[in-house]
Amino acid sequence: MGRIVAIGGGSFKSTELINRYALDLTKKENPNVLFIPTAHRDDNKYIAEFTEAFEALGAKVSTLTLIKKEYTEAQIDSLLDSADFIYVGGGNAVYMMNVWKKSGLDVKLKNVYKSDGAVLAGNGSGALCWFCCGYSNSHYNGGETDWQYIWADNMLDFHHTAVCPHYNDDGRANFDIRLMEKEIPGYGLEDNVALIQIGEHTEFVASHPKARAFYLIYLNGELVKKEINLIYL
Image (cartoon, rainbow, N blue to C red; front, side):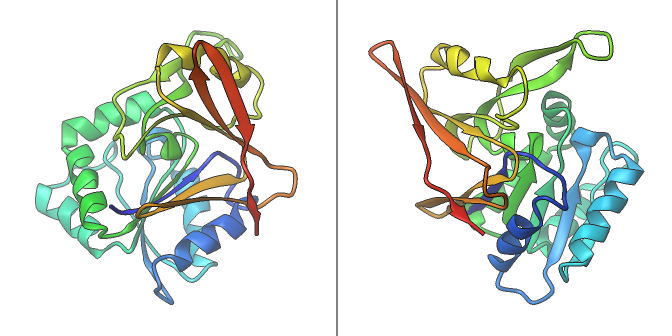
């Protein structure tokens, strides 16, 4: 079993304390970080922001841009093998997973997790991907504000629960109702909160004093919802 850092959301600045905490899990002074911005369609500005933020924390950053560049299998393997820390950016989770499956990256990341070859982290959709499924606005329904929330299914399923990142956003509260469809537990992770799994141990940390996280489960048709105790960094 590997190590996962699933961040509910927030900017690279607002999650800086979480990012620093997560990098420390590598036990490397200057860890090799591989950034995978597929969900953000390999946006150059996004890549630059990530690189600046993590280099400021002492990391050495490489990027896997599956949309903009063609890689051989050996090149992808080399990037994964040299990484101490793999961070998946936010964006469209459904699109991201489709790209990963075409390239075989989904299977390769499962192997990284099984071997505990690197810390696996991500924000928003980059957190959602480690779970069984997630409540997502990956489906754009047209118009500037007309977003439709859907289930992003068939994710990597390292943590067999449903998750709702950005749980504090408008429209996400419907996750509480729709979780009944899945018959599995769920987590509501607000921005600036992270679920951290290290082997069998799970803890929750936050980089903002007002950030919250919740555990949800349906028992006998009734929703049980509990706020999770967080470690504030």
